[in-house]
Length: 400
Image (tube, rainbow, N blue to C red):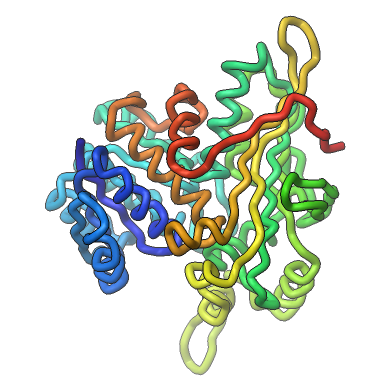
């Protein structure tokens, strides 16, 4: 069918690459590119005897547009799948524009020097992508990603209008460490320590970090504390869901994680402001990232399950209705299949599916688009086929 250039070789990228290799009728060729080519070579060596997909590797610094353009011109991919850092979204989009290549990512742009993530920087590319005749698919992970597809599916099949959405992200896994993050520590800690916010009645309501807590009993996981966070899919869903009155995002955290995080905040280790140390400038949070366990190593020791989904309230045929779409994923089963824990798996699988949607032409619309703007049905079918089967409930327990 075609060729994909995959930029990044961390935990999520490893899952997406495994899945591309399982789906070799679509991904006939992939090129894995990273600043550390040795990681790409090691993954190629692990996979190339198990798949019909042709795998090549390359070295690239995704901070430099010229390097990216040269690599895209050399590889000539049908799609670029960006699984690098959110700081690098814009340079990769610039390179895709220059080469007229379709683009997919899993998280929106975030400036390296400011703990702020929003879609405005990427939405500013809309007209240029339209004029170039190429598609940028934003947020093809799980949240954002599958949660947006769930919203589009619920609106298409279950509601005339959706008024309330609560996105619940529960990780019931235990990796045994006193403190570790299940995805990139720098991104995770910036996200969690930022102020929270939710969308209500046409405007943002801001909260202090971890100010709003709820307790929810998650199927196959149990009762967990969850906290309201700001999350980027709220921004696009507020625009794309007609009739919406409120959207909230909750994520579960254990007390040990929160206690360690507060201590690290109190001593300045989560700061992104550079400091001088022994004659050189360092960023405390980047140093902390270097000493914490690498999320890609958590797979063999993480046990338990994730449960992520959306609870909807709205109207159908003039009557009030509630509906719950969700996925449950087992950490150990993910590790058996692709050598990764479930947090990376639930992001990497949708990344492959999003790239497949563009590669096959199933989704094709020039411009910059969020995932809920497309027909959800083929993506929902692919989730069932490629390892993230979804479940539904018509009598969900609501969040107060």
